[in-house]
Length: 472
Image 1: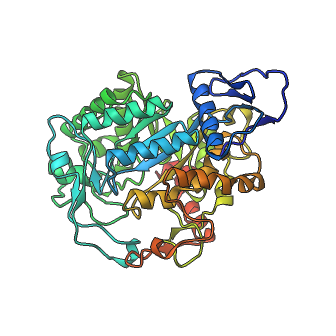
Image 2 (image 1 turned 180 degrees about the horizontal axis):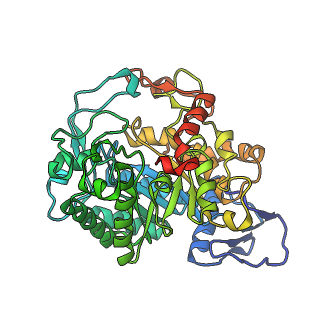
Image 3 (image 1 turned 90 degrees about the horizontal axis):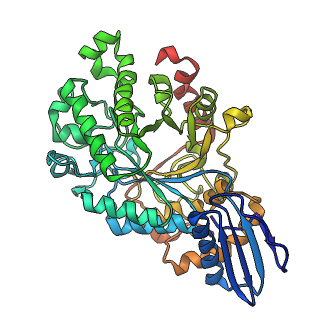
């Protein structure tokens, strides 16, 4: 966020109270600087505001009283599609904390790579962490490079990430996607799958290869989650649960017992939720869980438009809103042909700034179940930290202010140019407001732009399972 405070005065006055744990009061005067926070987190956010002011020149006198609107101000970083070394992850955390975000949702595994060491399962990293090549651009073009890609985090790496984030009052919520998006794990241990014996997936999109439901496989999942819990103190543990085809479960014994393949994922989610609850944790998963069977204790990440957030909140679930058309930072930033690998719908600064985590039409009780919002950084088309910078900033600045306390896009835009000088000082390769530079293009990795109308129609079809749950 480019913090512009919810209350600013330029002359001395009475000291306003700090009535929020993450709120603060910052006073700058000839006598010095005074910081009062509602908690250590509030003090930290006051220091970020002070840091930003120092970077562009301290005023002679200012009093700022500020507090966030939402408790969950998150950003998801996908390190499965393109691995980011630890220093790049720490830098990502630093920049997010500078903008007063407080949750890092770390997407650690997917079909294209497994990024977490698990004791006793060496092939998860020796095999599952590496793919033989990588798709270049959108799926429709069927282009690939010939370069192996991979990497993984050791336990020491992950503990360093968690500690670094905690020092900046950020919670790291890990995600190990299951039972779909598991081709990397199945490539490492084919006995986890349903007959597949191939490599880690090289193309983007959804793999049909999912986990089987044999007892040993379910125990494997419990083992992985137990290890994850030993590293990450987050009260929520992500298990994904999105985009999980059921075709391979047609003959699974669990499917026969439950009456069909469509019932398998709900049963599996219940097993993982029970295991996490035994460890004092809760399931965090994508909104497909609503139709496939989510325990009431689950926290839902609603991504398929605004409707899933409303459905989940009305059904009594805690919700994090992250609809793709306003929160997916892999989507293209303009219609300029020089944008690198333009995919998805157009998602410009005003679109992001206009995001509100709470869908319209909710009762007060349902609205209170919306914890906040999250921007998602899917890295299929971000092959480096520099590319992540370009796609994320300054759009994450707009998102951070939207979930902290928006004061209007015109005000935001009037402050952005000055804030960009701060990003310059921090070495951020943000997208210039004038548009992409020649070096930003990726001509060898063409995209697939989509219109808003086409995407809305897709989302309507995709969320039919929420309108007619029996179809799930």
